[in-house]
Length: 73
Image 1 (cartoon, rainbow, N blue to C red):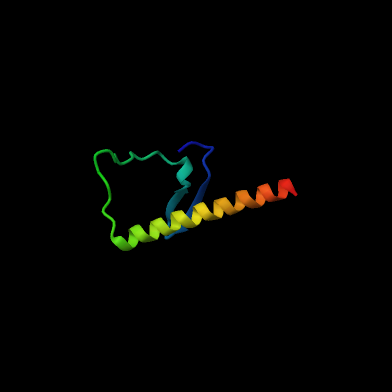
Image 2 (cartoon, helix red, strand yellow):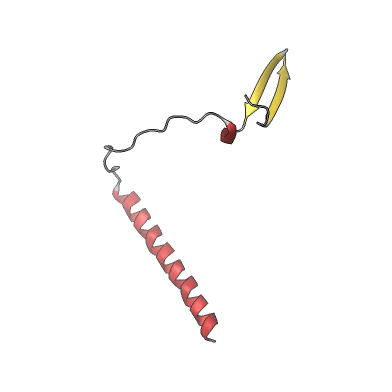
């Protein structure tokens, strides 16, 4: 451990535990995701994701519309 990492010392029955923030910890090896393929989705999940996408597009369009409306008037 280097001296510039924030640490918290906890004393329980003469045991010391050093708590290290994840940003200052040693990096872990990441999982490899290539070759996994598509994740199977049920029809309900597909419908939910589609409705969320449509909702976000509509809300984005509404924000753009209101912005253009304020600029014109």
